[in-house]
Length: 78
Image 1 (cartoon, rainbow, N blue to C red):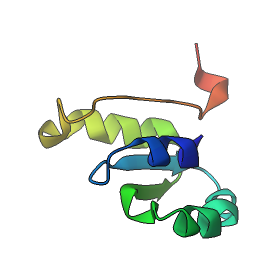
Image 2 (image 1 turned 90 degrees about the vertical axis):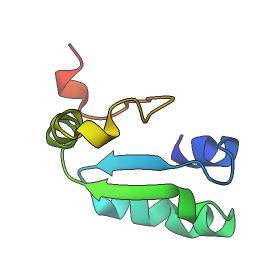
Image 3 (image 1 turned 30 degrees about the vertical axis):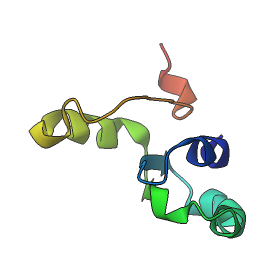
């Protein structure tokens, strides 16, 4: 889903990708680089909730997102 989203974004689009295991991202990274979309991805390693909480506290990030796809921290979906 990360690669598909990155491919769909305009060249100046940005993605903040979060995962608790960097190895998962690193498996797909060569394909992301080959597709020419690595510059669109800001990878953050760790649980999603603390990152999301920090983003909410950061006033400069308010209103800066056009789309959110959360497929992380499935135990906290409710």
